[in-house]
Image (tube, rainbow, N blue to C red):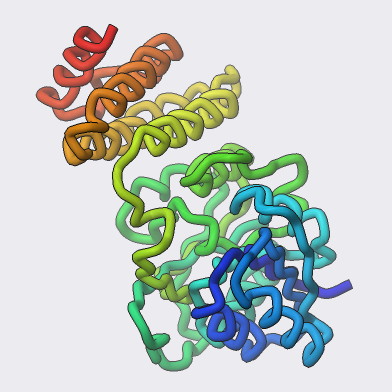
Length: 314
């Protein structure tokens, strides 16, 4: 059994795939497998994957029809043999010591989760130099949810800034057929209150890719996908045992998400705005019914706008 399973969903990324795989295979830690899930690519991605698999036995290819990023990750996780799991997006890259540092912190602290930071890049992978393990400053906690909203030792919403003990993810999957699936998955993990080590060092290099999902024009499906994510989080946190965490989600996460949703509506093309506001009004009414829409945590003017939107789009 390998110690780490690195899961890489792949869909039409021939331009960046080699750079991504090279950054993984050049790690200072060697005991890992790379599970590349080809999500029905129609470019040269399949050919590139085969070339790497032929040269390095650590590279494994899983092929599926195009089902989206969530299902690619879910299916990759089913194939994972490692004690730990790490997700990398195929147009990004990782620091040469990423796996070494994350594994060291997990093992020495008997942690279920290791969280770190990232750097944005456009073209070249940044040279951030080597890290001295003995000088790393970290925070260890069994209540990681609060650090999702902090500034120091902050836990990001994305999955690729997290290194998981495999058993922590048992029974937990990404929501199929939606975009922006990272944040509900992250908060579902936080609800399990894993022993977590947090460092502020950037071990992940996120590429600013104009063709990526995050750079799409504002559209009603984005509203619906974020709504689905909040619904998923509600189901996770609505138990009596997590009532304090539920209040924190309502006060900290929901206002942040709704602020983004409102901005999407306001910045949408005029032809799409009626559909955007209609979808947003449906989300607001649903959150109100679930007890997730509360004045606490919201800008007063923005909170008033939400009620106005519900009234005008009834």
